[in-house]
Length: 572
Image 1 (spheres, rainbow, N blue to C red):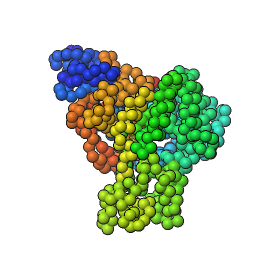
Image 2 (cartoon, helix red, strand yellow):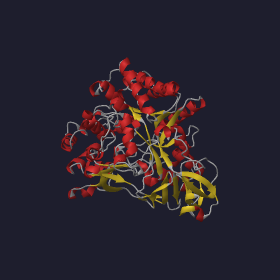
Image 3 (cartoon, one colour):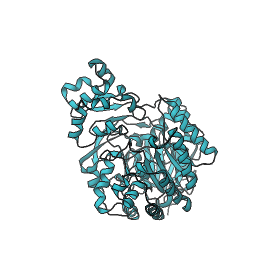
Image 4 (cartoon, rainbow, N blue to C red):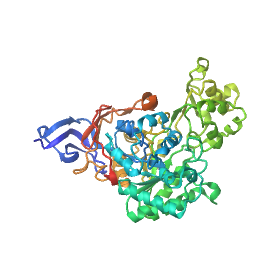
């Protein structure tokens, strides 16, 4: 009998511990790293040639929305194409359990706007062989999985289950009995494997609204409720919390960011556990924003308060049409005209009486674009509109003497909302990126939103972009630090067990790649979702092998058909 199932031979190991790289073979047995050093080919059943390549731990993505997609795509693409071997699902308080049978359709509708997951795909792809959260985990356990999955218990289904949808959306404070029941359900979920709880809390003008434009249930969660739920983790002394939070300015005096910081610190103190703050993002035109966030995270670290900043490290640009666009939801005027069937959207976006409210360009900046004038017109479907292609909205506005919003919407409406627009990234300055990722607060890489916004975003490429942009093409971080930040750092923050570093005894989640060949392929449209739906994807080049628990899931950019991934209950 061979000593090893697999030997990865001749590569340069960057093990994720921050130790210097070294040349070694990696022997894998029963899904784990069994031996590192110089090994003989005859000692293994299979030998993978890694000569001229780096061998590193698989990447850990703490912020995904693959809760639906995992049921029809065991590899959670596009993430696994880019070397991600473990994902956390159930982020932002959104998910599909617990959900009563009569509320299943409503639960799916909830995800169509806030995370832009196609309804037809969920309707065709979700098996709905569960009602409770423990039953949901059992269903995930039964499914073939190409990657490992660590699950949050999302608070929107919990609040809806306990209070009823209408009451949960009323914004009232839960009763003491209702709060106790929420705490009981979190305990039950964690007893069966949840890693903690999550919530998006963006207030009544949520930037990620429900399908009908109303706030999500968790958007209206009270601070007192969040603190009560945090104490559940303190009593258990396990788990962590992921939360996005924009306080309602009408409820608080003074600086809103001051209140945000105070509340997160209170949560961390109540829980005694890590709290993931979403999100630190660079805006090249407003560097004071991310600097303030970083200084606060650094201050928390100095004071022993476990608040960690998740950071958008990739350049964020969007390709979209107004058939699907929803990321200006924090403006009531835009939220109103981009809800409803396509025919309604077209009518409202064409309405001259609504245009004055939509022209508030200054209020529509900072998250997606700093100036609507910079948006590109990529492709028009009508022949007579082709003349606008490859121009910016600002250029068209000047030529036609129109307000930029009118220029953009006149083209979109004339084209039946089929025009493809592109918002260029607002975070391209490498000096700001270096400032963020070298901060003592150690921003967590990611916020990929994998599985969400599939028709205009491809954040699952963040790991490849980090290696290229920070490690190969610019002197931002050494490769040893990048691999620590892509794997070990998020694994430690989230409580993954025996993952994130390539050391003997750990699970063999491994990426093998040629740094010189590493590339992100152009965006393409693929029709591979259930229900006849499509999505935009970006594949990777340069990864020869991606392994999960010792099994090869990706070989030269393609899935192998093997599904060695695991549901990591309580971290694995």
